[in-house]
Length: 114
Image (cartoon, rainbow, N blue to C red; front, side):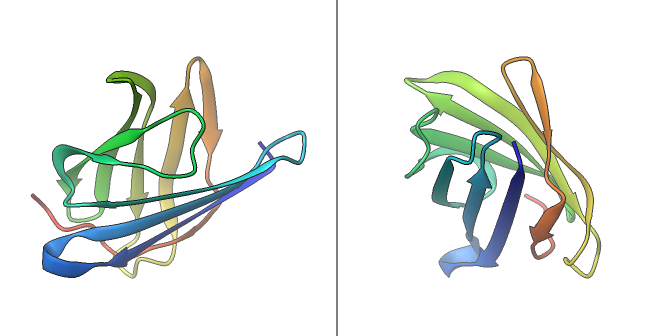
């Protein structure tokens, strides 16, 4: 992967809208979107060839666990931690199969604890 930008914004009723723009090592691009309550319940994703849903769970006010699923089976898992300002990634990685992907460019807001 060449780059990945993750943008998390407030949505309605305590949910967050998540946008992930990725440029692969081969130059291919994809744009994934989903809206989640960060409550451990699966929600549909759009634009990701490797997933049809995601489960986001708040671990703390600044950290969320994510599990991407396809047909109910995990395809990727990871955590995303951001600074209190929501502008700096403290730890952002997503493991697809056996690969670890780091997200250097994250614009986000603090996650609400569940």
